[in-house]
Length: 397
Image (cartoon, rainbow, N blue to C red; front, side, top):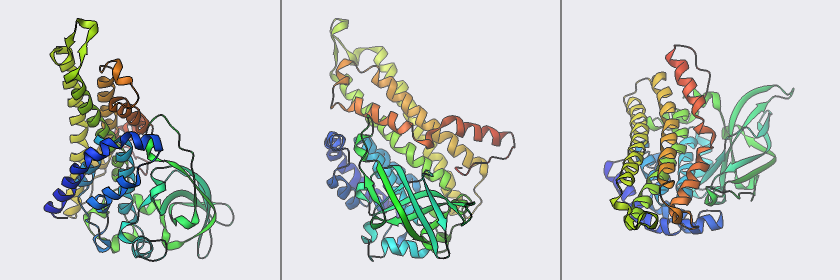
């Protein structure tokens, strides 16, 4: 993607932010992102950022994608979360066999062409059985963010042979006709994401729509034969976890902007009518939060760009760099949460009112924090293990 094209997408998203900000409460009340917002994001080109060029995508550098996600999440946490999740799936589909990509983007039955949206639930909540032609899949998967806007889904499950022996762990690609959505999403945070359950009952999945996670973790996938660009040579364990942290940093930025705006007008009755903008302690808290947000963002984008530049040059991606990506990704989430907490606890009682952005960002960020990709001890342990020169046995690197 040209620099001019990237700027055009970012500029279009920046113009959309006031509208997304205004719709944030509507998304929360409806427990899903408004259809108008998804359509508007499609029109900016956002969902094509990580999509292969042969299917109308930009194949943009990942920092452009994460920058767009951060902007969207700074206006509405739920919209940023769903945009990030749905937006990364074209990258993942780009790793599948060419026929799977054709099934989704080729304009056939069940396809909306290049505008097709895909949701996911990667946790192993189902079970597949191998047969001669493909796989039989059944199960119930939770937390499929934005699934109400998607017409395909990516699901994770172990695969078993006829004797019941586990033989693989795979991602399965299914059209909407093969699954149902159970509307169960009712939460205190990220309420607008519509992260409902996906139910599959003994559905056949052809082999070309199944991708072994072993192949993914080794960065040796069939899709790389048709998508040889550097974007598709990046590790899943770097791209996907960063997709979770980027919107949380965006929420922290949104909370920061809302807090500073609130403090400009706030008068503290308990302190003889002191204006908050004249309170030196308020300025210290703002500086601390700003530094945490900047540090989180700089580490995340620096690390991802380092991997991308190595891939562009055709060089090997060092394992210690990949471990650093995961270390700083979970640290980025921690920094963002710390910043939001610092701002929220110093915003005063009026910030607690329903409908105010600061409390919504606070709830949304904490909801995002509980995602499995944000388990800090697990990522830190992997990094420490690598520093000691010991083998790291984890596919999410």
